[in-house]
Every structure is written in structure tokens, then in C-alpha cells.
Image (cartoon, rainbow, N blue to C red; front, side):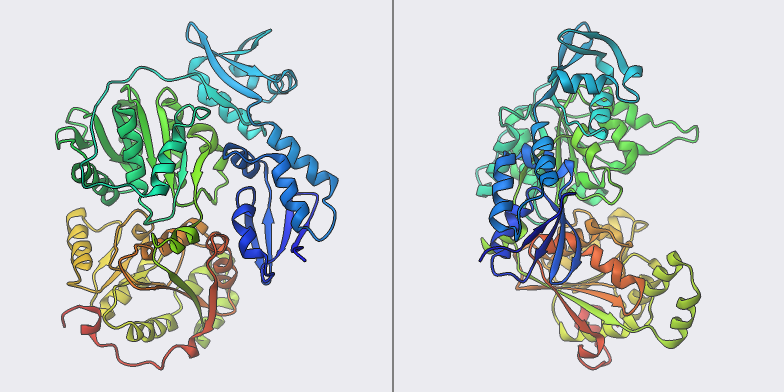
Length: 556
């Protein structure tokens, strides 16, 4: 018997995660749903319009999804659910924006959908005129129209095309070999139906940067690359110079007092920086240049002001790169409409089994609050409860016990609250890297860790973003940003570089507090990808011993 799904009419799927057929079916399930709750052994998945649109963009069909559900469901599929799947999947390709000439664009497609679109709140403000062939808009509203349609439940294909951009011919150096999935990701971007815009989803450590460079190498056009921080930006530049025949004069970090180069790299923070008058001069400079393509690295982290840049740059091709499209702010539809649909994704465990990613064991350690903190916790407001649980002083002793078990290994200590991280770094005599750490100093410590000169780093949320540390085999998360699934995935991703033995990802969670619930939510995306969280009590960790400072590679 293969039945392990219980399907509800609103798109909710209750799944028996301990069923023998579950693991084999998980990858298919994830193409059109997302995990919303864990009630082990029951996992709750949710189908939503955008998950079905993304499935359609990857070639799935309503028939295929319903056949899968009928095969594994324990009862007949509710008619309302069948309607949801058919209706949402049928929307794919039914509306398209096309060039209309004279600085105009035309929304064409299904007459019924066009009638609905015309009546949407906000559409009248954008509409120039209604013609037999479709709805006509000024081309400057290209992004606004797509965003409005998506927010009202209607995806649209963008067939308007792109402006002419300067060329920059370059080639790979002979020592660069792409993995098979990287080559597939590159080719998926150029699929005839995609119009050269879309999002590639690959795990941390899977080489998303090389995929981006490969797409740019095939396009041979001037490119703007937006990254989450300076470290990531420098890594992009280094990869270009080490992997291709481009020169340092052709690949540069953006500077307002220097000319733009064919490959210009900058950070989200730099682009969104304001003057005292509230102006964003860098945004203006970068949107006025005729880029052939804009790359949004870690697109799941795209800050709200950057959606304006994405909207202003619709005349350039767009590539989003990310380990997970999950956004806690619900802005997946903005990414879908302004950057593009998902064009390639591969499950994390599939790459692990192929040897491309390191194996990682996930351990949640439950740590009791000391009596004094318990009393304060009970009287606190909800937001304060999270902080009290996160700053649980008993976590420091458990941390030391874990470090004792991993003497000589590369260890990353990760957290959200700087007070706790500062105390830990001082106690262990380890370097602490935060957003305030100067870039030069940050690179010094990261390089020392990569070389093995030191074996422990304490990192704030900068560790969530594109930090390549292949020598790390242990990560200890002492606190997180509430229930962020993005952050959990990014932090585990620090251990996925396959240059170490099996990694261990510890999460220290205060027992019987709100942190337990938030931790369960944080883990959802990784559970989707096939990772199991082993839950242990802090008493099960080896008895506390005085930590040897030499064990973490730091001097007295």
C-alpha cells in the first residue's frame, strides 16, 4: 500500500513522514508544495497559487500533479482541490506582455483573463487604452503591470524583449570544468520559453557563482551583479579573474567616483544607500546604464528598496540565484514577477548523494533556562520572551561541552544577539566577526580559518550570506532570527562544502520556551530537503570540562 497523503480541499496535504514511500516521493511533492508545519510523524504541506505557478514553470502539468496525488492519497481527491490545481496551472502562459511599439506594451491572451485584469484595483491608473488585441500600457509600467497581476493571482509571461546592450566577449580558462547540474542550470536559463530571465535554486556550496558566470559567458553582454555583502562581492570578482580570461580592468567593484566596467559588482547596501536628503544616487546611476543582464545573488534576501531597482531594470535580462526561494515576508510573488520564474532546482540530498555536497547531521539540543531566567521569562511579553530564551546563559556551558567533543575541527559559532556572541568570543578568546567588522579585518580572520591557522570563529548574521568556508565541519547555532527558514538553510549551508568529513549542525534551543516553536518553524525548509533533526537534552552532551583554548586554535 502506497497511501500516505491526506488531501484537503484548500490545498493542505497531511503526509505520513514515517511511511516507507515518503522519501522516494518527497522530491516530486516539493515541486508543487511547501512544508508549512511539522507534527511528527505528520508533516503538513501546502499548495498555493505561486507553488503551482513555479511547478508549471518547471514543466509540470495539472494532470501529472493530480496523478501523483491519486497514487499516494488515502482517499479520493476533493473536487475543490482538483479545481485549484487545474485552474492555477492553466493560468501559465495565458497572459503575456508584448511589445506594442511607440514606447508601449500590450497585455495579450485569454479574453476572460483580460476582462478580469481590466477590472483589477489599480489597473485603471496604469491602462492607456483597451484594444481588441489587448490592454495597452506605457512601457515604463512594465513591472507595475506584472506585479499587479501576480498579486491578484495571475502570472504573466514577459515577451517584451530587452534593449540593446554593449558586448563583452570572454571565455572560460581551460582548468574550469562545470558539473553536470551546473551545465543543466545554465541551459535551463536559455530555454526558448523563458526569455532569458529566471531564478536558479541550488544549495549553498553547489557553485551558484559558476552558474552565474556561465550564463554571462554565453550572453557576452555587460552585466551588473548585486550581492548581499562585500565578502560575497569579492568572491565573485575573484572567481571571474581565476576562471575566465577577463582582466581586472573589465571586472570591478562599483565605486561612485569611477567609470562603470563591463562586469560591475556591488552590494545591496551600497545600491540602497541614501543621502541626507533621502536620495539614492547609486540606484539612479546603475539603473541608467544599458546593462545586458542583472544578477541578483541570494535573491531571497532582496531588500524592499531593491524591488524598485528590479522594476526599473526590466529592460535588462534578470538572473536570480539562491539556495531557497522562501521569504518570511511573503514577497515570493514579487520575485516571481520582477526577477522571473524558477528555471532550475535540484534537491540538496541529491547532490549530497552524488558527492557534490558534504553530509551533515542536524542536532537540536534542548537547554533548560536557569530558575532566575524562568521567573523573568514568565512575566515577559512575547518578543521579550524570545530574547530571554535566546540569551539563555546555560547555553554557554553546553557550547563548551560540544567544543570539547570536536577538538581540532573547524567550528563556526553562529548567533543573532551580539551580547551573547561577544561574551562567547571573549570567553573562548576567539575572533568575533559582525557587520561592524572592517572588511580587511574580516578577510584576515576568514583566511586564517580557511588555512587552519585558527579553528573557531564566532559569527553574527554575516554568516548567513555567501561566506565560503570549506574547512568548517561543525556549526553551533546559539540563537536565530525568530522563525527564519532562510537563515536556517544558509547557516547549515556553511557546512556543505565537501572538503571535510560529515558535518554536524547544532542548534541550542531553550527548553519549554517560545524558542522551541520558532526552531521547529526555522527547520521546515531543511526538513523539506531531507534533513532530519535529532533532538537531545543538554544532559546527553558530554559532561562539562574546562575548555582548552588551544583546542580552538587561539593563543592564550
